[in-house]
Length: 426
Image (cartoon, rainbow, N blue to C red; front, side, top):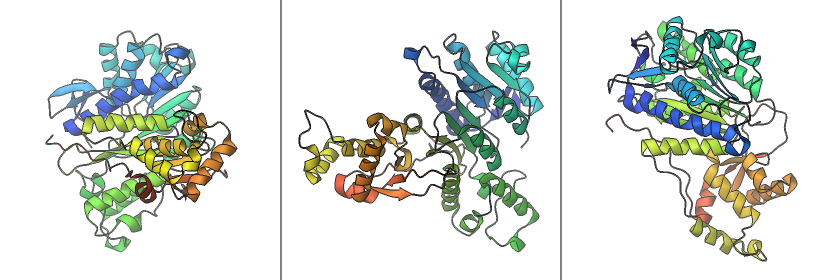
């Protein structure tokens, strides 16, 4: 796609697409840093990093409203500068391969944040005292450079024009997530979903047949690119057919989620509609439920999606009537562990996924054997079912997922509604 600029801002359309995406990221970055840095009680002392792997220019000109706003890289720099000196241990790493975008990015920083030294940010990484790094490199080169920086809790944002190769996602994940769903790393990934089925400019839509002999040369190129997106060819039988575009879009997102679960316990795809008939997704990947729940709430607040707020009082009464023995002898308003674990998973765990190594569940019960017995109890009552997430570690930890039909039958609690993008007309 040819790049256009207004001043130093990259020019994009979509008040309900790009603008909304930037707003959500602008809200999430400070929230994420406030938690992962240790917060005020720990003097924000924990090392953290925001890694923008497709930084663009730091500013976006929204054609729909003729207005320039901060892009995600701009929000990262703004967080670093605005909250100084508390952000001393926050590294902001901006990677941009395109030379023209990179030049505009430096100009935006010089104009908006003159206190940032471009010379130092571009200089030798081990002589940098500002913890702001500018890299005009390819992704593989940048990832090798980033490895030398010794990052703490990190948030990686992959924001290409259409999609990023899954091998790049895996290459980044394998550097960071080295044990069973290890916390401390989150990915945000941009995927322009509808382009695969509608095409755009010189990019042909995917064919409606899985037979290679039926494809045009342009369709063949698109299929190859989709192979890179998903990391294999197994997706083809699910998507290269005559199903409605909307169904195929859902299937693409579902297959992408499944692959990301190799590395991340929670995967939240948030849909955006920049124009009529167009859809892209911003996918959050994390091994810590709190950040995912907060991001879902940020998204719901700005897109008029209802939050998932089941009636705890009614659900608790129904649970107590089914299992009165669990409540006997408990003082005051204390609730049994079985209930507390189940409710935490219902309310805060994306897709209802859990296991005995979940940080949130371990904070409720530090005795892992007892926690495992509680999860086993919930499985025996069919509130949880076993899940094969396809994670990549040789780890015997059992994973579970909420069995929503049984939860609805016994507790009157339905699953969270499917997220819907804010329509352009709104």
